[in-house]
Image (tube, rainbow, N blue to C red; front, side, top):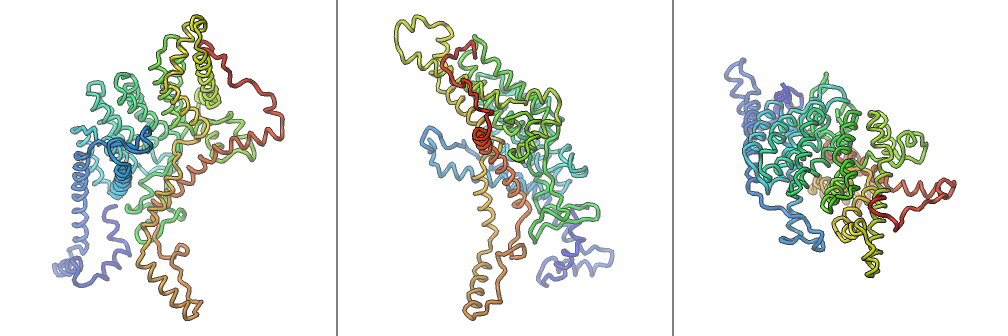
Length: 554
């Protein structure tokens, strides 16, 4: 019914009646009318729709061929002055743009399907992932899984539970998270990377598979011999955290190509600009208390427990690197949940707290008691730990600069371990990056300026330059005739000639939310400077940085 509902709309009937005589559909309608009154006049259109269903599977086969032909992708190297080592930076930018276009295309592709076609396409994708392993195409394959898992939810419920049922994510979990222990490292990395893409915008459907996700992350982080597998596990942990504690729109609702039929309501998405009011049915993923509990469970199991192991005198340099790396990826996923003060104190503030911080505090207050104790003051505690580690590195550096034999003889085992920590560039780099995340990040989506640039480029594509030049010519002609009353309303207002898709409009609202979370980072030092100038709350300063730190105190 959803597939053929467009043929019953008045817009379709008026367009069908206005077809020229040379049209194939017009000739087909005449043929069906001559055959008798029992023949439906919309048979040709329905046959075309069936052909489109087969075309979607053929399109997926072309996508598979692109993935099979993919070579090794390269990022812009940080150690090569921003230039790739084997290819030019232009090649890297083109590959990045290709991945972005593929993601948008696949999201539109799966969102526009009806349920029957989606089941066939989902069966094709799961078969492809189960039978083939393409290590060089892991990133693009993860985008394919992301499009499958983020564009099909059960929208029959209310606004709070529309993301509970996700058939695409359920089918992918049965393929990607099974028998990882019995696979090779390359096969496990490929499947974990695809699983990270599927989890990214899967909503509350992740809760049902929490045990499998924990097992997958634990398996990847328990393989210290393979650094690629360990990094893939960190990425899976990061995306699992961000998918459960962040707010993001549901792609299935924001794409206009799939008409939605509700209770006496039909939304026509083609041919006019989208709106966010009047029954637009744009659903957003808002974290629940159960999701916040799961986020705290992941953070406690894989980050905080490893952080405690760093204080073991028998811990090695490699263990320090792993602990700090896991902590860094965890903060990239859930830094929006870490408040600078207790949730109750944040909610009691009247004017100085931003809306993003108040919304986060309300989410934490609805969680369990164990989650509150885990997240309460966690940003402040982690910041103090990072300061202590930097004090330890500074203490070790001051000892090593003296270069005296007497000092070398007095060095004990702890001091020798401190020298090893300070001389390790990877540990120093991880400490700096973790500190930067704690001080400047209030959400997992931080590249707001890049997203704005991409959005402006997508908006410019909608411009009809032929119509724009004609409008400018007509305006100039009226102006020369001093006919100032004949103004052109093109490019002016909602009725100005542009058609803004709902995906582009919702994406702009999403960018605004990310901008609020980014601006929350700048309000922290402003509040501190204001309090320092008015009250004496911070007048009693304590020693924050000291060179007397040792490994035992840490």
